[in-house]
Amino acid sequence: MEWMADLDTVLVTGYAKAPQGTSMYEQYKYSGIVLEIDRKTQCIIDAEFTLITGVAQLFFRKMLVGYDLNNGLDPLIKRVENHYFAPSTHSLIVALKIACQRYFEQMERNSVSI
Image 1 (cartoon, rainbow, N blue to C red):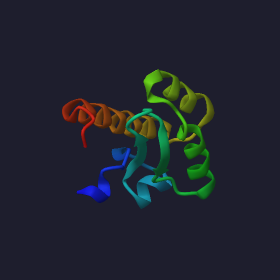
Image 2: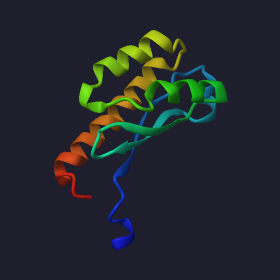
Image 3: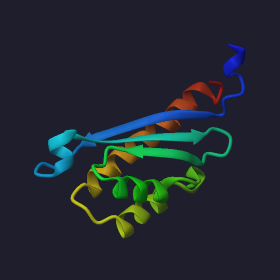
């Protein structure tokens, strides 16, 4: 399909069980992350989360957008741990790891030829 030939980004998701007793659990049951990643640069272009408040969504998005996955996940996870203090922190980190793992596995499987 020619209309998709120049699409350089992919969308990937990850989910993890939300901690019980939180509003996230009551509303969604899961922590979810959607990442748009540039296949050429490995940078996170956009991100969305199943966080309840707009402030939390914006804050978490600012932590991730622009991050270069070529640097590995550890620095990004440390960043989350050092700046996001909430009951859902661990759940969001698990969802982030799952999304990134899915991305790397798919890129390897498709040899970046989506």
